[in-house]
Length: 377
Image 1 (cartoon, rainbow, N blue to C red):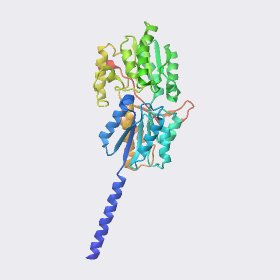
Image 2 (tube, rainbow, N blue to C red; image 1 turned 30 degrees about the horizontal axis):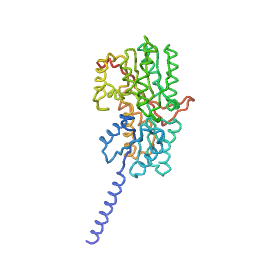
Image 3 (cartoon, rainbow, N blue to C red; image 1 turned 180 degrees about the horizontal axis):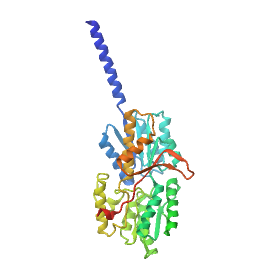
Image 4 (spheres, rainbow, N blue to C red; image 1 turned 60 degrees about the vertical axis):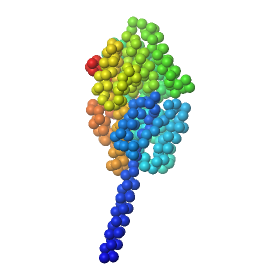
């Protein structure tokens, strides 16, 4: 009897230890690091949706500072703080602003080789960020050089105003898109004009950049009176001002936001209460109706889905699957392509190839066809 009791006790202890080990292994979390609502509402809301989907015990969220260029150390510290939690097994950062590379390298220096690092909408050099990350996801900015100019040609635009500033024009993908825009503009006979706007991360802040746009668009329209003029800016925070200014000018055209989406500035500009990412088709219909009230449905375009939100959603889904499946391959191209095609049928997904022909195996670029708002009336 004593022997049976001892055996049962030993079995109970083994079961207890096994349960404890399973519980320990099950205490995983995914950290999502985004900008604030003022700098990138879509990313912020996408992080909230990840919490709703997987639960607050699985998803932890944080934000980097609005003035990220002057507060890079804060961004690095935020990444390190997330990685200091032993239960965090993946970090999904979008947008991966300057400081992401340094932060990811710090994570590795901490000995956290078990953490999957995903960089969305990376703002650092592709070679640098791809070397520090396991997976990089970005809208195909270069292809936008074709899509934007095709839309402008379809509208019969005569002049194209490109707003940016030195910090953005030092980024490889933005420069490549700009060069393709210029090449296409020359081929189509569209005059392309570069205008330097104030950097929103400079001392004067975002308000100065927005005010510049509101004042400059009417001046450009007066300068090119009688012509159709297209406008584009490389910065998220300038989109509401640019949309507002274009809306008020009958001959002004807006091919897309810098981060193409139905929710990128449109709700604020048009006074719409849209739940970001809830129903894209309904959002497009509501935007089209408001634009039509201003006779502007044929002067605006965007992509049919919020690409930055898709990047976070799929980045988190990929991270969860990587963790829970016990996968050892961090960059599973087949799985990444399948996830995107499942989420948005028809999406174009490719690996980034730089100007010298070098392909980056873990750097994925995404594109969607522009919408015609008149189709949603």
